[in-house]
Length: 522
Figure 1 (cartoon, helix red, strand yellow):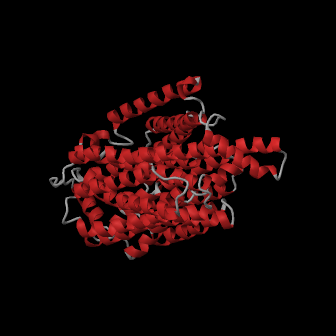
Figure 2: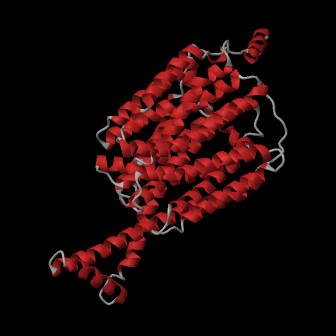
């Protein structure tokens, strides 16, 4: 008994032998790399789709496979830390992330790219949880706020830099270089980790460590099959395809068995945190926000490049105000957090996200960059105001001993939400575009005076360059091309509106959250 007490005391008073700011360096570099790769590939997605000769829907696997793999890896962070020691696991994760980034850059097919992104996601899945734990342990309690503020700033800056840097590299070099740039950062991070990181007594390598193999297998099967269904379901006409039906049965069964196994053992995740009302409501809202965020970030560059004709760099530049809005929100939140009910700030944030989504939903083909920048700034402002209070409120009524499990489970669900949101929104664009094309095509007939006048004018302009019969065909074909472009525009607009409405719909859940919880202790 006395040994246990002494061990707990030693754990509490343990501090690294080096300056905590030096310890923070490798964790900040690692977090920056991981978050950067969530957004840097978005603006290059059309270029990758062209290189691999795949459709827009298929190219989103490059984004979603990364999210799902990192979500699966999060659940095994504790086990790997005990098996290898946390410092060794951190270094292993950085090496795997870096090598898989190189593999992404040399990929010559969509299958090879998805495999490389899965490896990259597995490598990156442990970087954020370990980085946060290291920072919290290394700094004195009075300095933790400052350390997490710097860490949070990195998390905010990376999504700002990602689309701009990715666009610039894609336009001036080629898309593989957006992955190759991870190589020097990865080497530097490993070097700094070897020098500065230390394992506290409770994070060192342990003997007789066992993994819940069955639970981990069921989780992987559940998430993998769910992602395949969401990504390929639209092209396969959903449940009209027998293989989608069979895969859906496997998905539902594996998901059910996973949750049953965890309710009995709690070996991978402790589901008892779902008894806490704050955690349930806060997590649901954050999952929706993450789905809206990653879905909009995935389709906005595609809209700007395929419909508006923007370059990859310019499309990334127009997304930059979103990060500036999030940065502004972090400053304002710091000033208002102690003066204003945090639930009110969360409601304002969700309302701003909804407003931005609806503003995106009423764009047209005659817009300027300002029309994209303003909703992006509003969106970023809303993200900051919504996420910062919700992260703390969702775990405020949990005991300290539940924090690590709750944060990991929340990260897993947010990753799943982001992957599902990205897949669903690409399906919506495809389906809504077809619906609007069906509604509009009836107007392309000679009995429509507007259509007839435009075809006649276009035919007259082309007749001086080609035979009149060919000019007539080309004029009608150009009008059909405009119809396709307009119907696709409407498909994007419908998707943006639904994203905005999703953020507004979850606002009532904020009222289920307690703002002044009683303090908990271990």
